[in-house]
Length: 425
Image 1: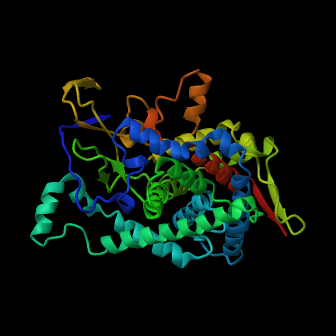
Image 2 (image 1 turned 90 degrees about the vertical axis):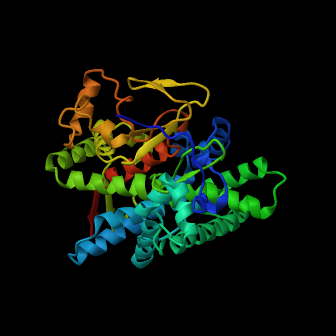
Image 3 (image 1 turned 45 degrees about the vertical axis):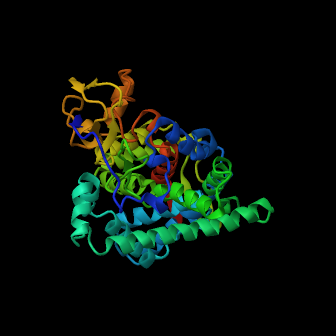
């Protein structure tokens, strides 16, 4: 479903600083600028790179078997319930942080609940609903600020600064780890800051004449969006980058954490789906057994999980039901009018929004659109129906989510492990 808004010009506000006031891939207006920023990270997020990554395989063992399983075992042994959504957020933040900055440098929210709660509180305050004002009505917001009326709550700015300091601290630790890696002093591949060192290498090439502080801020800004933001660019004829403070683009918290929590919920409510998924995993000989004599079993390879049709269907249906639910904004060409979704003569430079939630629940495209039915994807495959065009959880085209393969990699392992895991003591 397309929503057209006849808004042809935008201007940044003082609040739209977007990560250290440095541009990055998420707020690049032109195709050229976006390509430059995206190229900085795309190579490490490629499917082939992830499947062959010793660092990712090692950190997966550390996070799943070293942190998650002991936590679940402790809660189960005390017969205590667990807050699954918060657990999901913590797990995914730890996982993505470890991939970006190295396991030893990233967060450990799974084992430090108070730190996780504090981080999530700052995240929510930074991305409050009042961010509507500087995003949609920047001029009025500036006028109100001039009158001494702040449209954002008091906690917004301190939380923004908290998250930026937190991110800069991770960058500093990752920079030290990169130096140790270059000297051959890091033995565990999980501790290598794979994404950080790739971005740092690219920034050094792209900004050869810049000073050290500028490069440092550029790196932090590029990585800030992977963890801490709900942002997406809204272009301006005058500005090269404009921020939407409400757009969910935070891979760790939104795409992984939230959708993982919902997937676990849907599976918990469907006994038949649980049993079918377990049977599929067992038939592929991917069961994971932890015993006193074998406390660190080998996790299934990502390639083996890539060939499980029902697991794929479960993930697709969860992404259909619970995608990032705000708009996917684009701007029409500035040199001509266009036609979209049956609407003719849309003016140049017009922002158009398409909402994943409505696309995925359109009754013209989906049978029982509000019900979680993984089997619908198996039926598509049996009928030879191409489902690529109907599932839009990661967007499409050159601005498709760069982390799509990491998301699929991690969610397959997390869900397969949760269904295949057995502990025997």
